[in-house]
Length: 201
Image 1 (cartoon, rainbow, N blue to C red):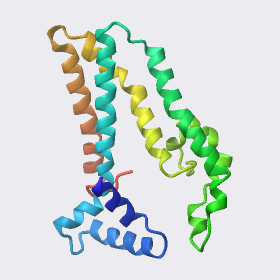
Image 2 (image 1 turned 30 degrees about the vertical axis):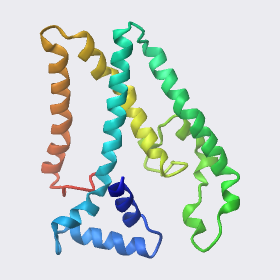
Image 3 (image 1 turned 30 degrees about the horizontal axis):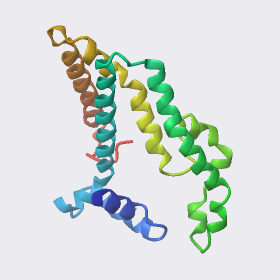
Image 4 (image 1 turned 120 degrees about the vertical axis):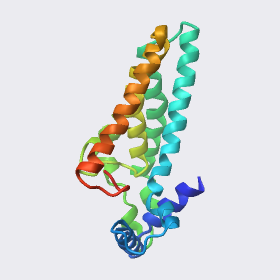
């Protein structure tokens, strides 16, 4: 958690400090004065992956329990997740669109505007704002919910074969094949476009 806070605070400080940090990060990406300890901050964005891992672990664990009890329902799998996330999100977005604006004061207040909640609220409630280049997020943290929901939607492609294709370990082979594929794609892009080991978007 400390790593998450360090990376986000250092990379997202309001202007002018943020400009200084991004300039420092740009120099590091070109190899200027690179030190191994600098990688903790430069690659700090990937520490968020630990939360994706924990989320996936819980989804798999709870889904396998339901499958063992013969109570797993794919429609309910999606409906319950959507309701569990969307009701609190809608409440937070409603607060951000109304009362939150009354608390914003000072010279940095424009940096924390949440005008996207009024205009693009439905993108966020459908968790599709990450598929556009227009910055349609209502609140900065909602990108995580959208990314997590995208992986959740795809999770039965892994979970169901793992449970039901257990003869001759076909489920495990399917899981291994998907893992290799999704490691090979970014590796191929990194090699082809000569990308640095961070900042791949």
